[in-house]
Length: 225
Image (tube, rainbow, N blue to C red; front, side):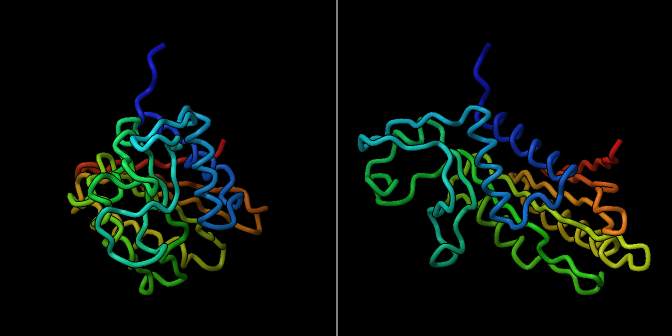
């Protein structure tokens, strides 16, 4: 059986994370928990073998909080949430700090940004996506040289009998998300929302999956059996 490409493995892992979120949206308390789960899925689906760098040490193909070649912020903020290297990327690492001969971070084949419940409010008038333009720009930047950039935003939406504020707010967020993502055609941008009602035992109700890729929008509604 031919080995799956890195992009295929990443798409499979992202979709599995989304499907898990559809079933158990409260299983992941924080955004960092989602990062850890995706890291696990990437390794489970084949990205678990380290490769030898040009400097002579082994490097794992999946890394977290990786700096872009052109930084838009100092410190941990402004780094890619997760990146995935192909073996050829790792072989070009000439120094112990994962940089090339010019002392710049070696660009990964894939970079992923994730967010959980960012900007969701009880009133549609108050929703915002303050970081999305910055993250999309970082992912698509020619200077950062990411071959396959991904953006994944996930939302837990409280659908209460007496208050539909978050349901309406998510609709507004979807419009903002799609409009921003269409401007960055190289980024594969995914938006996921799962509705729940505490009065019904927190069980997932309807889930929405929106993908914006090369300017095209696809939308899928998922309802539990």
